[in-house]
Structures are given as C-alpha cells and as structure tokens.
Length: 499
Ligand SMILES: *[C@@H]1O[C@H](CO)[C@@H](O)[C@H](O)[C@H]1NC(C)=O
Ligand SMILES: *[C@@H]1O[C@H](CO)[C@@H](O)[C@H](O)[C@H]1NC(C)=O
Ligand SMILES: *[C@@H]1O[C@H](CO)[C@@H](O)[C@H](O)[C@H]1NC(C)=O
Ligand SMILES: *[C@@H]1O[C@H](CO)[C@@H](O)[C@H](O)[C@H]1NC(C)=O
Ligand SMILES: *[C@@H]1O[C@H](CO)[C@@H](O)[C@H](O)[C@H]1NC(C)=O
Ligand SMILES: *[C@@H]1O[C@H](CO)[C@@H](O)[C@H](O)[C@H]1NC(C)=O
Ligand SMILES: *[C@@H]1O[C@H](CO)[C@@H](O)[C@H](O)[C@H]1NC(C)=O
Ligand SMILES: *[C@@H]1O[C@H](CO)[C@@H](O)[C@H](O)[C@H]1NC(C)=O
Image (cartoon, rainbow, N blue to C red; front, side, top):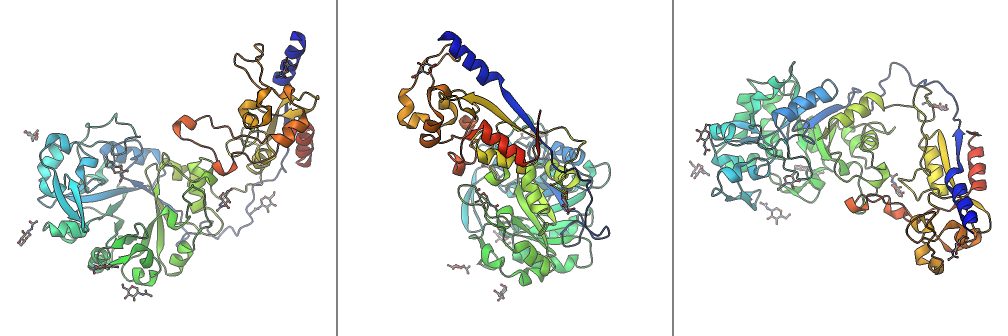
C-alpha cells in the first residue's frame, strides 16, 4: 500500500515533460515601405512620453526627484508635466492638486486654515494655494505622496517647485507641459492664469499648454498662434460639465471641429479610446483617435499608471496596455501621459512594430507554467492555446495519474487545488496521505478520468487573491482538462519536439 502510493507520487512529481514548439524561423523583415513611418500618429513621428508630475509613481508628484528621475529613467525627449497652482501673490507652482492637503504637509503646518471654497460650483473643503504667499509655499510647505499605496519614504523631504524652476532640473532643456486645471477658480480669487502664463512664457519655454476649460484656452489661443507651444484641450469624464460652455465633455467630444478652432490637440482619459466594462474587460476601441486625426488634432491619452487596475485583456502587463494605444495596426495616439514614464519608453523603444509571428533566436527560451496560467485555469486547453499564441517556445505538462491509469496534465496531484472537486459529490473521497502532504486531499488517483472529465471543472489559481489581484474572473472555471495524450497531439500540431 505504502509502496504503491509512493510510486504514484514519484510518477506524479517527476514525470514532467517538456515539448519544444518550433515556430517558423523567419528573419525580422518589415514588409513596409522603408520610407513610410511605422507610426500612425498625426505627424508620423514617434509618440511623445509625458511624465505627469515627473516619475510620480515613485516620488511625490511634481517634486525635484520625480522630475529628475523621469529624465534619467525614460527615453530622451520625455516631456515634464506640471499642474500649475497660483499662490496668493500670483506665482505659479507645480502642484498636482488644487487641494494642497492632498499633496503637501500644509494641513499639519497650519491646522486651523481649512477653508470651504466653490470649485466649479462644488463646495470643496481643504487648504488652497490662494491663501498662501509664494515664500510660505517654497520655504515652509513640503511635498508628500498623495496616493497612499505608493511609498511615503520621500515625504516631507522636498519643497514645491515654482514653474520656472522645473526646466533647469535637466542637463539640457527638457520638453515641458503646463496644465491649467482651474482658471475659473483662480479668477474668482482675483488671480489671472492668463496673465501668469503669458508672463512666464517670456522666461521659460514650454511645448504644451493644456486645460479642461474652453474659456481659458480659447481666450489665450491668439497669443500662442505663431509660437511652438501647442494648445491641448483636456477632456474630463463624459458626464461632467465643462464650466465655460456648460456642455458635457461627452458632447464636446462629438464636436471636434469646434475644439480645433482653438486647440492643436486633445488629451483624453484612456477609456475614451479603449472603453472598459465595469468588470474590467476591454470593449472595442472607439473612433476618437482617427476622428481627431481627420480634424488635424493630435490625441494624447492620459491616466496611465502601472499600479492601478488595468483591463484583464492585458494580462496584468502595463506594457501590453501601452502597445494597444501606440501600436495596434489601426492608429497610434500622439502621446501618453503617465506616472511611470519608463513603461512607454520600453514600449516605444523596444516592443513596437515587432512581427509577432517571428521567433528571435537571440532571446531566452520562454517556457510556460501550466500554459498561460495567469489568464486561464492551469493546464487547460485554453491555457495551452494562449501560451502558444503568446509566443511560448516550450509548453509544459505536469503529469498526474488517475485511478484508472490515465495520464493527465494537472498542476497539482490534489484535485482540491485546481478543480471544483469540493463542490462535487466526490468531496467525500478525501483522505490523508502523509507521504504526499500533511493536510487531507482528494487526489487524482482517487477518481477515474471519466469521473474527473464529466463531473469536475477546472479552477483558476489565484495566488495573490489576498491582495485583490484576481485572475481573469470571467474564465474562473473555463476550459477543458487535458490528458497527456491530448497534450502531445496538440503540441504535435505546432511542430513540436520532445525535450
Ligand atoms: C511576419 O512574419 C510572418 C511569418 O513569418 C510573415 O508571414 C509575415 O509576412 C510577417 N509580417 C510582416 C508585416 O512582416
Ligand atoms: C517658515 O520658514 C521660515 C524660514 O525657514 C521660518 O522663519 C518661519 O518661522 C516658518 N513659518 C512657519 C509658519 O513655519
Ligand atoms: C489625492 O489625489 C489623488 C489623485 O487625484 C487621489 O487618487 C487620492 O485619493 C487623493 N488623496 C487624498 C488623501 O485625497
Ligand atoms: C476680488 O476683487 C473684487 C474687486 O476688487 C473684490 O470685490 C473681491 O472681494 C475680490 N475677491 C477676492 C476673493 O479677493
Ligand atoms: C447648465 O446646464 C444645466 C443643464 O444641462 C442647467 O441646469 C444649468 O442651469 C446650466 N447652467 C448655466 C450656468 O448655464
Ligand atoms: C459645437 O460647439 C459650438 C460651441 O459650443 C456650438 O456653437 C456648435 O453648435 C456645436 N456644434 C455641434 C454640431 O454640436
Ligand atoms: C477582452 O476580453 C474579453 C473576454 O475574453 C473578450 O470578450 C473581449 O473581446 C476582449 N476585448 C478586446 C477588445 O479584445
Ligand atoms: C485514495 O487512494 C489512495 C491510494 O490508492 C488510498 O489509500 C485512499 O484510501 C484513497 N482514498 C479514498 C477516499 O478513496
């Protein structure tokens, strides 16, 4: 008895088979006319990378370290984004939020200063730059990380930067983007963003000027007509009202001819281009990029962050997300606004316009773990197919044995791990086999292949579910179990070779 189960265990654990999938050996030759640009941007130029508040995914937004790190850790030409807020004495500072308590130590410095102001008609309470002069902002207040899931290690170590201090952080003059989120609010406090922007434009060069307020951009457009500064209209949520026209951003997005009268480009939240369902699945892309390009408007996509939830269609890869915006065969956005500029740098510099059906033999061999088990239940037909589609060189079958001697591919000898056995009538077949594991289990060799195949369903592994990192929930029980024989047949169809 002991010998039998020990032998079974050996079979299960050590008979792991690797098969090599030889994909066709082809040189990477692009069929495209060598003169035509591979980029489907408006100009045909490579998309621009815009670092929102610098490398704000790591350092406090708009801090000197965030801007400096963006310049060293991303592609040359990366544009530095600054959200401009005005002090009481009319000096512009780069601070990500109109509420300073979100991004600075102000609430602990001046605990009694909390104010209630109307911001676009909405009563908002907090600490505001209009109540402090520039000396206080640059000498007493320090920057903190406003997104609490990001590191607080650099909190309180750096002062806010005045707008004109940012470009000098680079060894050479970096490209610079000013975003004016709240012209109307500042004018209600007798501060003119227009006057400020015009005066600062005499001292520092900036390449982009954006705002979600039609009134601000159209009022300043003439002053930048013959300059290299591009005006960009920033779209907010579709249902929000644009404060100067009282139209929703959704309806303005259908009126791009009007936007073109004062702007050279638009900045849209990424879901305007690739809408996502509430359960985080991608819907087909909209036509906004091609529509805007037809109007002669550039399109910048915003809200990219590697530590925020992205659609399951991207398999948790922010790189795949970037590629869907810049290299999808139909269009490319003209730029991406991101908290992690290193990711579009990689996407643009290393992973765009690659022929996916070509194997590059200079790269390390890619071996799947139970197929594409991050996307589908382990060792199912769906998981193996996805692994091959994704370019795996080797797919793997961890071999287990059923009670009637059928060899199957299953990641665990214990059916409780990767099947729905606990929800089936076979949940009574539980036993303790200390040679295999300390806890009781229901083992592959306690059920026949027929019993497994007809009564159980695969079960997605979710190793990080404690951190709410759930794998492809629509496919929790999807796919079919695979015998070793099925596996070999499948691999053979892919011109496989045993390893
Ligand atoms: C990519 O490679 C495949 C297979 O080798 C080839 O048939 C196809 O023409 C290539 N596509 C391009 C755009 O070069
Ligand atoms: C602000 O900083 C200055 C210079 O360091 C200091 O003299 C002043 O007391 C500080 N004010 C507050 C309110 O902390
Ligand atoms: C600060 O602002 C960010 C970005 O708008 C937001 O995600 C975050 O929740 C805010 N934090 C606080 C403490 O209000
Ligand atoms: C702005 O200026 C007007 C006219 O001088 C004055 O009545 C108003 O109180 C000022 N508002 C603020 C917020 O300072
Ligand atoms: C803006 O439009 C809404 C309805 O779309 C209306 O209720 C509101 O009065 C309008 N406000 C102004 C200032 O025109
Ligand atoms: C576009 O917007 C402008 C300004 O709000 C408006 O005058 C015009 O009627 C709009 N056109 C359409 C087609 O909605
Ligand atoms: C995203 O994944 C879902 C589920 O697999 C699929 O139905 C949908 O078509 C995918 N979306 C896109 C744009 O490919
Ligand atoms: C499962 O199989 C093992 C080995 O044959 C056996 O010792 C055990 O009793 C079986 N468990 C059940 C519940 O049938």
